[in-house]
Length: 253
Image (cartoon, rainbow, N blue to C red; front, side):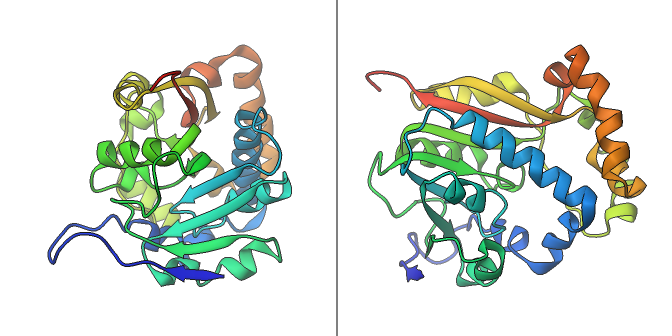
């Protein structure tokens, strides 16, 4: 179901619309095949672990979630999920991606989310922060509408991503449809959430080596075998990326 909402702001205002790309068929092809399914499996499992303490049937807002990468897992876990996108186009492929799962899709200004303060028990946001026109403002909006927790992902500078600019041409040659992205240090992300009354309580770094290497190899089995030693030794926890974090509202804020 789609509920359209009027976009906030006047003519010429910069739009937060990177989710149009991540909601597209072209972007979905980045996660096709066994390697892509493995990436999404790790992401969904980590997200559910971070939200495990959330009561069943909690309300969750998935900001920029037209890619459908986590919403289905959240619905399967028994939660009531609303997906908000910057355009009607962001919801076009959701019926197929959600495979009959119940959800609500709405259109709204991602720079001024059309919901009251603390309207949802939790807010999720994937594939958006590194492409945001103003990530600090976006974090503020995520925190504003979350009552308990925000779960979001970001590429960490505390990883081999620090060499991403040098190898971007190679990455684009392999993936073809990749985009430049901003990287963040865990400390600067934590400070921004703290500015809005949230504390980062848990993190799940996903992969020790760049995902592009596994796409190039085309083998999820090889990827799992390669990543396992890093997980056992704690290297992924220290140096892995992208990082999925959960920030919780501080009492009294």
